[in-house]
Amino acid sequence: MKTDTPAEIRSYLAAVDRGAAALPAESRRELLDDLGEHIEVSLSERPGELGAILAELGDPAVIAATALREHGLPPDAGRRRASYPRRVVALFAVGSVLGSLGHLPGAGSAQDAALVVMVAGLVTLWLCRWWAAGQKWLALAAFVLPGMVMSALSDTGGAGEVAYVLVTDAVRAAALVWLWRSRTVPAGPDRARVPRWVGVVLLCALAVCVVAVVLGFATYLGVSGNVKSVDLP
Amino acid sequence: MSQLRKGVLEYCVLSLLRDGPRYGTELLGELAQTGALATSQGTVYPLLARLRREELVSTDWRESPSGPPRRYYELTPEGRTALVEFALVWAEFADAVDHVITPERTTTRRAQ
Image (tube, rainbow over the protein chains, first blue to last red):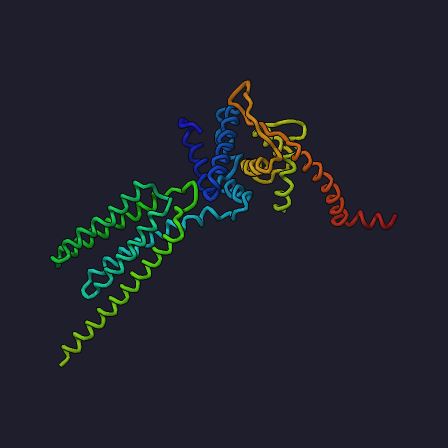
């Protein structure tokens, strides 16, 4: 469709596009072209009857579901597809919460866990094709920069640190909302394909980090236990 | 019932193309008039796309004396064969179903 298409037609076609997100890119474009052409031809035959023409075409969701079925896909395939971006956002949310908890007295090891989860989130984000490169860099900046500032100031302690934790959390929460809203359905698969060995290396690195964090936590518990036993007499 | 309608719809589309090429809105208008279309018109386009993929119909663009150019749908030889086969199967099937679901006819036949 051309750019001078009325907003009503554009929003109708966009609704079909969203519902048919799981279709192969070419088929989705074909469907939108067919519908766009139908509207254009009908309008030339019956000028001024756009509302009636769209009503006859029917519910965009029903058309999209029919298209999915004709491709042998389940009718809810469009909805299921957002699972990968959801994973990205979940990792960042968990990482942020752990990072904030790490500033509570006696919960230092949560910081290490936060780092692991955040790195996992960033790797997942970078592989995900629902966001453009520019959006990924923005998200990276929003998540990493406040944390860096905070860690530089973390030695100061007291009220200043609390304020920085709050500011960081606010920035991250806003970034998460923005990231989720700005997701767009990619033309191809959900995520970039990586060679199998890269995946294996990443998983191994993740496992090592998790073990290190758990061991660190155990050591921390052991140390505090020792401290207590020393204090007791 | 909706499954039956969906299955038969594609052959109704092929039948409407038997006498020559039709463009999208023309085809949908005729289809709506036959009463075979139980859903909205827009759902026919995914069906037409599949018929195109399966090479039962072919399409080409033609200029129109008024308005934008139109995409015409035309039966391919494969589409014509599929239609002939369906017509045979449908005649037998409709006959058989008629016999089963119309008790009066069976009893009157027995009485004769």
